[in-house]
Length: 266
Image (cartoon, rainbow, N blue to C red; front, side):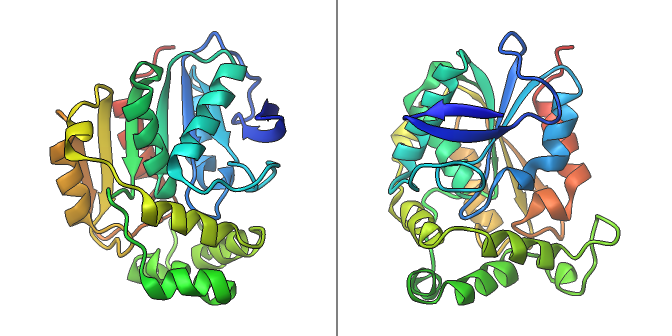
């Protein structure tokens, strides 16, 4: 379905169910140069089990219009504006990679709007390799290859997949190739610039869950574990053998973790 956000149409995947602001809501926020489709498995489950689901396409991503934002804070404000337009006062927010930083920023600056905060593939700060950022600016297809290789655990590169008949790396390459010119560079720059003080992290009040994989090369589990210690009473789950693209590499494990964290209310 379409929302109007900052005077531009924004696409939101609702998991096959009609939007109902009266239900408890779960918002899914994707990573750099991605779109709502990375959440298909998890978002459909919540949509069919009593929740109002909004898997977003951020501006200039997927089916949404507008321009990609320059900072994580600008993306966070965009998400809050979308919630305002949908009369969603409070929601569980689930973010992956860049999306996890957006979710984290929302929880810090709009604390009353977040009931549950789930951060997947997250580190704060989230440094971006110089080679990747340079390729994103000057040779985007090389950057897509870097993300594909670094973003998946080794077994995925051998064409092992939790989804029968699907090559996860080919699917992810197709997703990246669909991104609009300049979007990946803008997103990676926003991640690179993001900072949050330890004092701010300690003041986050939302129930928090951090998910990481032992084979994550993009946001290493050591960094995720440090973040979990900085946020009060944050739960931390480490998936053995899983890389950065955890929603596709271990869809069932990720869903189980989210189900147990965001208690079903229907």
